[in-house]
Length: 232
Image (cartoon, rainbow, N blue to C red; front, side, top):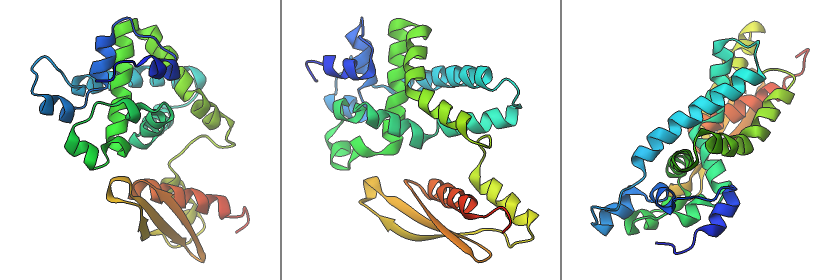
């Protein structure tokens, strides 16, 4: 295992009292299985706890920032903020994949770059901070990570919404055919594939890119909404 994780602790802005919590958060099941050491535990249950801590804090932050919104709008915002794509991006920003303890097979398949693995790692790290320093320490880290995202939502002219749903509603309101989505290209290696999706609404066609077909569809819809003029 890595002998010194102090640089990583500096990156996330938290120093662990117990290195055991940190090391367990960074231990993928592939590593612990290959080690064949019963005392070496992986981070799967930490993921479960971290998911709960993250959901609670993000829910509280949204509730306080948008006191007049209904449950549906708040739920959409929360789902957007804690999506796998979002959490994987957070993990990358801190270089979490670089210090992950990974098995040989998972290493060879590009595990350090996989969105799902990085998202789980981010949740496990939150659990470690919570167990080591309590809810306030975890909340502080979450606020640092997500404040820019919360402010971006707050600064939009319209409250955040699901772009595909919004585009469909706009098309229906203008008597246009329903949006049609098609995957037009896939780029990158299997472990880090990017999808390019085109959406057509009447005479308008726009494209979006994402690490999943669903994300690419959302981005294509977002661009279509942007390109519609008010009197189109």
